[in-house]
Image (cartoon, rainbow, N blue to C red; front, top):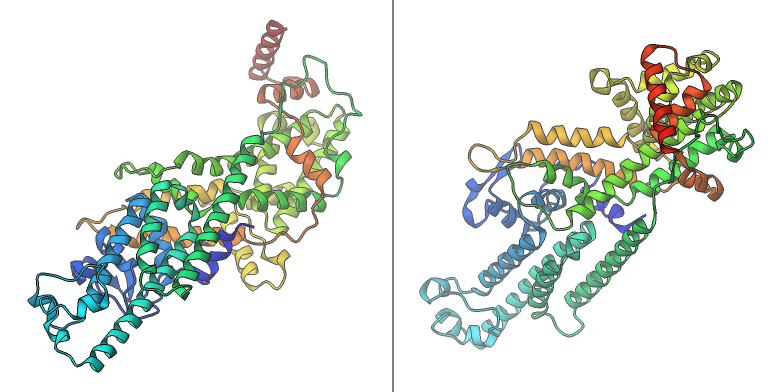
Length: 524
């Protein structure tokens, strides 16, 4: 599993509720005033973008709550590109350091302004123009003031590095942008100026940079692998009575145990869903937002991971339909349907709702659903139970109840098998979409509606927690190879195979069959 997933639990804890308070000190509304951040029952619910950015940056006696760090870094990309946010963080850090350097209680008000970060301590304390009080201090007291200043500066620098570490671990893809890397190097260069050779700050930055580069390299290799992989070949299927021979290998020839097949499907699901990252899911909001014109760099790449996972669902549905429709004998088709019903049930028991829904969808495709003679021989009681769980009425209420049960089981689990929760992905995407549509990004006073982004972050965090579960089942390469590479029929080919198995029964089907035959003859 990628490193990103492991980070979420440590950042967000079990709930990602946003209720937690900053771990060190408190910070008000920032330089813009307390009115720029609005809290309700101790929870941040809105603020201006500038105030929210200031709330992200640590001070000597303040470090932002980790749930806030994750939620703001995740949601901010809707309003500002990550590299621009990083640049603003760098500016705020510089302002914080300048305030820290203004150690005299009167110097910053009596002089022309705070010192620059390039000034040494000796230059600062000897400057009567900037700091007359410090310049008149005895040498001993001046030394104590210098030590206090250095300690505070090191503490501040360590907190900045910690913030950057959390950012690079949770959202490493933000730094694939060259502009972001330039800003990162600029910030780290500033904070290392106060550290001695081989100091703790420099070591922490070196470790953070190495981990970031390794993470980016791993993602780059994964992306190259994705480009090489292709969806299962679309088989045009039989050409008028040229059905595949009965001896041709099918799924039952590779795996006849429904539980084993369900376990291998779960393997594939967890491997595929692990390539989705929180910033990818945030594209659901970014792409659909008509009010905010900003689009993050790499949107197409990020959307690709979502589309690739959704494509797996469609391929599995079509594979199920192909396996049923390609069978010549009705008895064998009946067995194939009952097998997939059992596989779907085992997926449900495991907590793999996505594969379960894909299988049910495949059996409900028109070329399969119309095979009435075949279905009449199927014991459909188990199928009816599965369809009940996936009943779309009341916004899939039955499915959501089952998902909630699986989630509770996962939270209380002692074994990896009980921790598995793979939701129906397209329903999860729709939930994020509707959450985005019903709540505005901005409130009437111009503030960002942060209450909305707490909830989006909570749902994305929960999804990412599910993806970090290690699959406990032994991998069977032979079965997985078949599932991923077996040719699948196009929709047209499925109808042809279906009509050849059971002829058209009404005028509409007869017209469709006639049209298909004409099309195929013209091609030949």
